[in-house]
Length: 113
Length: 112
Image 1 (cartoon, rainbow over the protein chains, first blue to last red):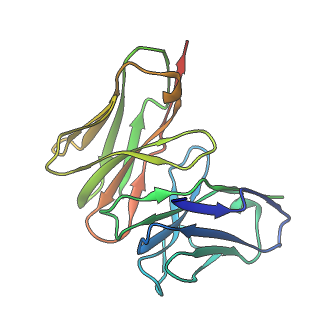
Image 2 (image 1 turned 60 degrees about the horizontal axis):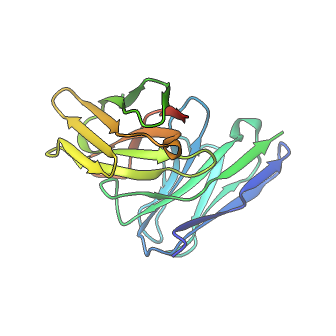
């Protein structure tokens, strides 16, 4: 089992460009999450999907959109990238809500110039 | 506001020594507390999860304690190894929902 996979590993964008971060899990988990990690700050939730077909905003959703494509895949889209979105992005999955263990992917390091 | 504070921010110890990392939280309602290990350039990996009724939990050389009355937790690492060099993150879950509150982590370096 690969667990949680993310693509790409690294990306550099110019301000205003768009891109989609991909995430997939092979653990048959119901819930999936997108976080960002910035220096000196704890991980912050951007969006989550409690189950296939549903998505909800987290703590810092502005500037992002998500799609729960199917039970396995959850993508994060930046429509018009800004330097403030320079960060490391992690996807995670779990069987259900916050009481369950979350399994994290390896991360995508994004730089917006 | 839900908060998780960790101390120290960073720590350097010699291989073979023990160390203890601290976590204080003001999260309500409380569901569980987790400790994660994050190696440089990788995603966090769970070490332990403790519910309200558990006050000690071990995972190999890692032992976590929880005092729900004082809202404090600690992670004790025994006989440290070079591979223990990482960031250790304390995370608290509220009851229900999908929200976790993350600490900023303690950066541990184990040296020869």
